[in-house]
Amino acid sequence: MNLRHTLSKTKVLCSVVAITSTRQFSSSTVSALNICIIAGSTRTSGPPRPILSQRVTSFVKSSLENRGTTHEISIIEARQNLPLLERPHFSYATSQCPKQLQEMHKTLSNADAYIAITPEYNHSPCPGLMNIMNHFGSSTFGFKPSGIVSYSAGQWGGTRAANNLRPFLSELGCLPVSAMAHIPKAAEVLDENGNVINDEDLEQWNSYIDRMISQLEWWGDAAKIHKENVDPLKKSPTFRSNPSQRNAPS
Ligand SMILES: Cc1cc2nc3c(=O)[nH]c(=O)nc-3n(C[C@H](O)[C@H](O)[C@H](O)COP(=O)(O)O)c2cc1C
Image (cartoon, rainbow, N blue to C red; front, side):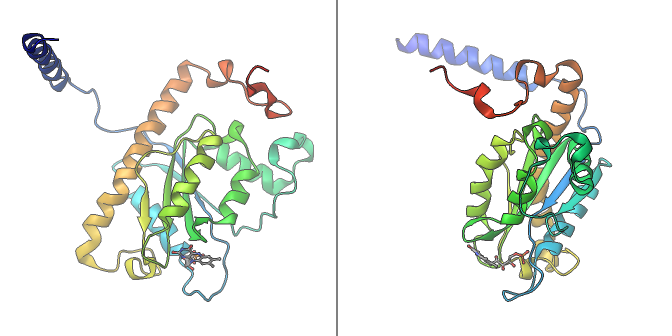
C-alpha cells in the first residue's frame, strides 16, 4: 500500500467519524427497570468488625434511587436463611418447590437487571452470593445484564473477588457490564447508613458507581426492548434435564 492510498483511506475514515458525530439520539434517558440487588454477606458477628454488608447495600440502593429514572428496586440478602444448596429451584416440580424458593424465583425472574454485591473472602466472592445464585439457573438470569460491586476491609476493595465473579455471572447468562465498583477500606468510606463519610469524596464516589449503573441501565433497557421483538429462548432454549445440549459434536 503506498502513502497516497493510506492518506485517502484516512480521509474516508475521517468523514465517517464526522457523519457519526452528527447523529441525533432520540433519547438521553433509559426507561424504568426492575433491578434486583443481591447482597452476598451472611456474617452476623465479628471479628473482623464491623460487618460491612448493610453499608454497601444501602449505598448501592441510594445510588439507584438517585438516578434520573425511577427504577423498581428489590433486594435479596443471602442472610435470609436460604439453606446451602441441596436442590436447585429448577429441579423441582412447581407444586413441590418450597415457598421461599418460589418467592425468591419470582423476585429474580421479574428483574430486568441485577447488581451482585460481594465482600472479598480469601480473594473470592462470598459463598452466600454463590449459594443464592446457584439455586437458580440461566432460565432465571439469562439475557439480562449484571453489575458487580465488591468491597473489603482491606486496600483492594475486593477486586480479586469481583474478577472471579465475572465468569460465574456469565455462565448464568446475566452478563456483567465492564464497569465495576470496588470499595476498599469500606468502613472508612461509608457510615452505618451507607452514606459517604467524607464530603470531599462524595462526588467521586457517586460518579464512580454511576458509571457502572449507567452501563447496567443501557444494557437492561436494550435487552428488555429487544426481548419484546425477539424471543431469546427460541434459538437458545434452556436446558431440559442436563447441559449436554450444548456439547461440541463428538
Ligand atoms: C472468611 C473471611 C475471609 C476474608 N478474606 C479477605 C480477603 O481475601 N481480602 C480482603 O481484603 N479482606 C478479607 N476479609 C475481610 C473482609 O473484607 C471484611 O471482614 C469485610 O467486613 C467482609 O464483609 P462483611 O462484613 O459484609 O461480611 C475476609 C473476611 C472473612 C470473614
